[in-house]
Figure (cartoon, rainbow, N blue to C red):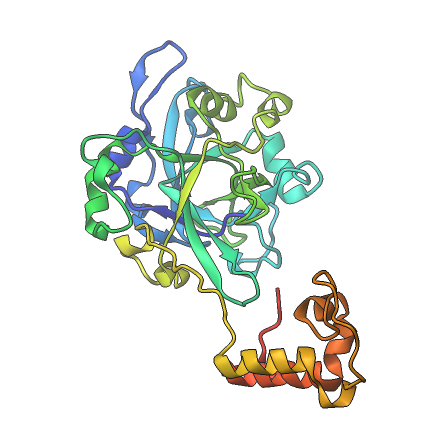
Length: 353
């Protein structure tokens, strides 16, 4: 899925990053519609206004469909048929649109049939990876691989967040496939343009972070075909919707978890702490040895020495193979005792996710 992005570039820099060639091969810059509604931010969340590319033909009849407009739109599609007077009363989530159900749900099928295709612009997007065995999540910033320059080559996790500003002027924007719609308030007023980001199964490179990702349009040709609804049919355009491996990412600070935080620190790379292997204390090791060799409840007459390949009855290997035994006898008490030694009572263990 995609539920948080960054798009902090100043308007003029963002415009230059969207340079393109029209149907006649002329180099052009897209024109803005309602530019004052664009609010740059390192931490964009649903319901915020974000810049999207779309064909000029949506606004001007007879215009060249290859010409482009940048328009800030509300993130979270409000269907044109919505009857309430307040868009926030929409009872279902439309920030993302699954590619496998796009032709079945009226909220997305109707605008798609009208050619209302757009490209959502961002520096990149954030995704959270669930940390194994805990309720914590590690955020990542995900974006297109960038061409290294003299300035950008030295940027790393140890750099100050402000150092990242040196590379933004040549930044390749992430271009995500979207659908938009136009909703008119029942009681009159300005039309509300809003969009949804199409999602697909994650590529192999991102699958360990999350099982879904935005449908990314990789390259000028893909962007042109998706936007030009006059020349490219819906069926042909949908062939562009698939995962891409041309993506990179790095871990970022949990500062980004709060959508109110809007600083360079949100997307600056950080070093992840190295997980330390849990080792039993000295007293715990002695208890393990004692249980494995001379438990008072299980003493038996001496037997011939066992071969090295034999496994002691109460070894950790045996307990892992027989989890039901962990709840009774010395092994169960040992488990409780070890948890208390670690400062983590059994009753308060976090559940595995």
